Each structure stands twice: as C-alpha cells, then as structure tokens.
Length: 255
Image (cartoon, rainbow, N blue to C red; front, top):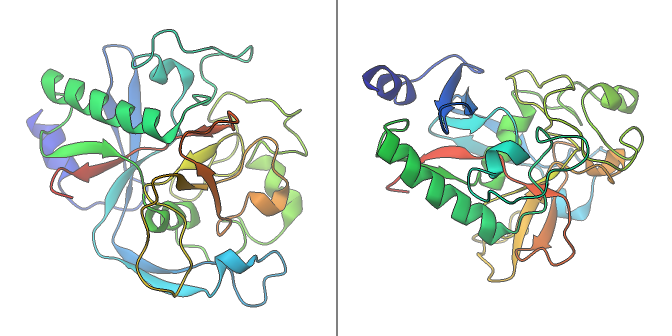
C-alpha cells in the first residue's frame, strides 16, 4: 500500500500505468496524464467542426491526473451490479446501459470498497473526467482531428464505429491505443463526463439537473462523431438506453 500511495501521488512520464485491484481477480489500469496545456475544440479550418466545438481555445491542465486506460467493462461493472446484462460478445464489452446516476453510484460504492480493502489511498476517489480532462487525455499531445492524424481511412484501426462495428458492442482493448495508452477513446461506447455540456467562451460551466456531456462516439456513430473534439450530451437518466459507459479518473477527495 505504501508503494502504491507513493506512486499515485507523484509525477511520471505520460502514459505511465498503474493497476488498482477492484477485487482479487479484476484490476482497473490507470494511465498518467501529466500537467500541460492544449487547444480544446476544433480548428477553424476543420471541415468536420460543429458550432459546439468552437471557438478553439487554450486550456491549462495545472495538475496531472490518472485516467482509466479503458472504459468500464461489464465484468467490472458486475462488481457493483451483479445481475448486469452480459452481451453476446462477452463480459469484456463496455458496461451498458448505464445512467449518469448509476455511474456516480459506482464511483461512490467502489471508492468505499477500495478504501476498505486498502487498494486505494483514502484521499483519492473514483470520479468522472471533466470534458477538459477527457479531451486532453484523448489527444495525448496531438492537435489533429484524431490522435493518429487527419486521415479518416485509418479510424477503423482505432475504433469500433458504424463502418466496422456491425452496430454491436465489442470487447475492450482490441483496437490500437492512443499515444498515452488509452483504448477505445473513439467509438464502441460513449463516455459520461462530470458536467453538463456548455458553450465555449460564454461564462462558467453549468451543472444541469437533466443533462450531462458525453464524449468519444459509439458503435452507431459515423466518423464525424468519433473525433477528439466531438461533443454530445444525453439526459443523465439515459431513457433511450444509449451506449454510454464511464472512463473513471482518480481525483482528490477534496475536489
């Protein structure tokens, strides 16, 4: 525990990994995202850009953070909800469907268990990423439409989306990762963020009672929906059972 505590509370090279044991058999691998800055949103000359992704603006990440290398799988989710449905493609598929409130409850419950087992320092908790954290981790230092460049024809090597998914969920980690070692940041299942979607350059972020931002795109999404800057939102109750999962971050209990 002492070694884990020291590791989780120090700076590292981007992409450094650490495993946190959810139980005796299942781990959640976290990837280190160092402090830095990036241009959030779509470039002015980006033909894929949507109004909600502009203006592109500088965001500073003052403190590094740990983010899960994968979104939550069904087998991990079943530690919280034992009767959760397992898709035909197997328990390594994204946990689905989940509401924002279910994902929040997962974070609280699993944090308590991890503290009790000694698997996680008591000053850290599982949480949602903010939109800034999500896009920063997704881009992994890149400025292009996708972290691998601007060539849409390469997307199938990195994502399950409408063109190659057969409109089905797929086991996590089968496609190529981004430069910091994050898998399935595009496609397969959307990912909940901490806050409601907001308009860039217009005041403070809102925290709606009804909606939350989602990122990444899903198996039904076209390439335009599976970009680093692409933004969407969903009612936090997810009444239409959209494919939305969670990529947890480790956050201080004080925040």
